[in-house]
Image (cartoon, helix red, strand yellow):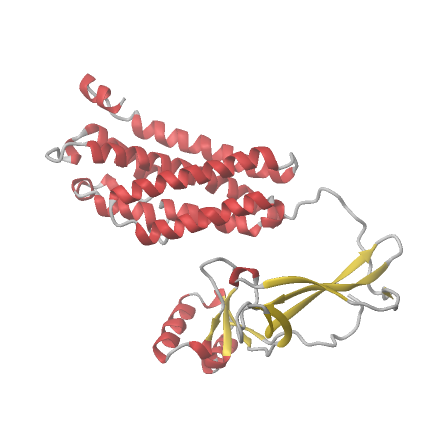
Length: 366
């Protein structure tokens, strides 16, 4: 920014997407911190020195599958600051974040006299972040000195302030946030309807011979795009395994868990565009997804989890309507919603209306 060399070097980082760097990371993995290039609740930093030989081999296999998704970083020693823990002062690892403000009118930068400090809640912990329970504090620099103002070098030009410009990447994330929000809600509702019919059906009825249930199951496959799914007779005869996979298998492209995880990934990428209340709903949806994936072993448990999930998705709907200002962010999110809603309605109608039913079946489906 100022045309000068950095006084403090950046943390040494090796991207595993390059053969030479990947080799270095593997040779020194026990002394490095391994990070995923995308942040997320399920993608935490891994300290190689804390892993056993078996765990290191497992980690290497994961990196080999998608080397471009990982970086290795040197382990940096932390400074400590006194923290008030359990009614006494204790040393805790801490980090400091400073800020520089661009003054476009005077064409200068101002270094703020202070910043944000974050300390770890546990002694010796190397993960100092909000996600791991880090303690955040404002940092003030006290003294009679004037604010530090540095003139910009001639080679640096300040861009004029342009309002209402949305980065293309942010716009894409907002669009897919709306798509996956609608897809998650539609899939969860159709799955609830299917599970309700399945649980209420007589045990001696063959599912593949039941026109209502078989149509619901096949529509579920078409809407989630999880072919062959229930379009093959063997899954219609024994649908429970496929139904459970559609609920909680996050690796199954098109499943409810996959759609919700994609919704969360896009939402967390644009958190700065969402309100604080919306953040709380996102965290609640993430926790519900984790519970759903770990606890749902029966279709009845899956049905109850979907009930909770639908309520939380609807809470996000409500906050989206009430809390977001009608700017390009809101419009892009809702363009995604409306397109996905139209596509889902078409798929459901095509799946439901492709067969003719007798009067008895019609009464049962209603």
